[in-house]
Each structure stands twice: as C-alpha cells, then as structure tokens.
Length: 275
Image 1 (cartoon, rainbow, N blue to C red):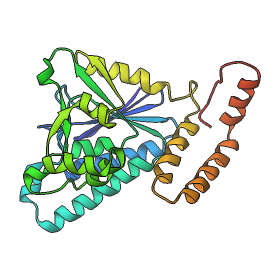
Image 2 (image 1 turned 30 degrees about the vertical axis):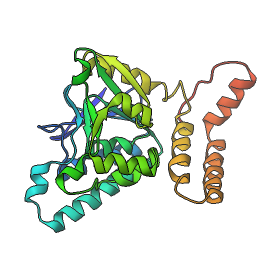
Image 3 (image 1 turned 120 degrees about the vertical axis):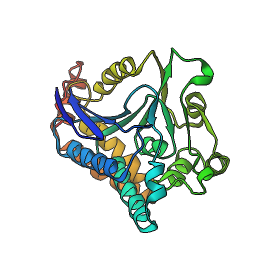
Image 4 (image 1 turned 90 degrees about the vertical axis):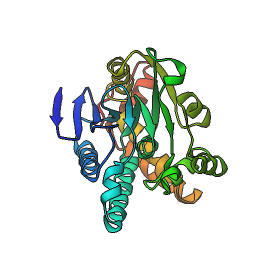
C-alpha cells in the first residue's frame, strides 16, 4: 500500500483504488491550498496506471466536507474570490471528466461546497452512523443563501442536472439541509450503509470500490462508460452518440474487450487487466 501525506489532502492507493482524504479543522473545509492539492491528486490518479477508481472521504467521523472555509472568504478580496471559484470549478470539472470511476464516501455532514464536491463524483454513498440517534445523523444541502451568496462551485448547475430545475431552486433558495435518506429519495445519494464509525464505513467502501477494478471488472470500460455519460449528457444527442462510438472503438482495440468476449463464449468469468 502506497501512502502520500500532505498537509490538507492524504492520498493512498490500495488494490487499484486511490483514496483522497480531506483533512482540515474544522469541518474538512476547503481552502485554495486544499483545492490545489485535490487538483494535484486528481492529475496523479489520471496518470497512475495502477489507479482504476477514486474514493473521496472526509477526515474523522463528523464531516465529509462543510464547504469552503468561511474565514478565508471573509478576509479575501473579490478578485481572489473570483479566481478561487474559477479554479475550484476547473478542478471539479477535471474530476468529473477523468475516465476513472469516482465515488464520494459521505462519512459525515456534506453541505455547501462539500456537496458540490460530492456532486462532481459519479456515485455518492452515505453513512448511517449506528451510534447516533436519527436526529443526529449527518445532513446534506446547499445553504449558501444564508450567507447572501449562491453555491458557486458548480452547485447551481449540478444540482439542477441531478434532480430537476424546480426542485433544485427550491432546495437552494430555502437553504435547507436534509438527511441522506431524503438525498436518496431526490437522487443525490445512491446508497446508504450502516456503520459505527468511519473506519468501518471505509472498510466496506474499499471492498465496494475494488469490484470496479481488475481483475473483477474491465476498468477501462467502467471509466469510459462514465466518460460517455458525463460528456454526452452535455451535448446534442447526435454528438453524444459520436462520443459513445469513439469510446467504444477505443475499448474494442484494448485487451479487456478481447478477454471479455472470449470469456463469454467460453462460459467463464473474465480476468481483466485494465488494458
């Protein structure tokens, strides 16, 4: 297991899964420095042939991420804030379009910019903390309106695409926070798992993420399914079909497609390599 520690982001790679842990007190809030380290970790994952899936989590048991550091925003000048938001948008776009599956492990409160990071992932899985009463369970939402601003790291756009325009507007103008269960009903959360703490939750997450890696799955196919959806959903249908065809052709030229077809004909389980 390879581990690299930085001040604000801890990355580790195990069995094809890179885990990115956000670490900042309080609330795993992100600063420009943290966002730059997230950006660096994304690029590292892209170029690392041993990485087939990415998991993002928060440090501790209370927060996934509580959004941008308010103290930083309060003292920064408008020019800095503009470029801070621009870079954050670019970073999350890079995450969203990286052809490797990205899973947000929501191990605590996921609000504001924290939810914006999670929405740039492909899958979102929430933790139901079995040591907490129902009213103490983690919350999610985009409450930026209470600060007199809007969700400025892609929140207005991704929320509207994940739910619908009217519901997205309602959630943001009310500024309400809600349970992961409500998030699942809205389509923001894919699954909710019971766990007594983050360690137990992440043990389950590692096993879950590994199923999308070789030899279990053809990870190039997984990544290009993700890319076809993320890129294709934003262009006209005919253009989206062209993207799909090009990605399919890339897969046909790879070893895993040959292995998958052979395994099907030979009535055996495929043994994929990620190539």
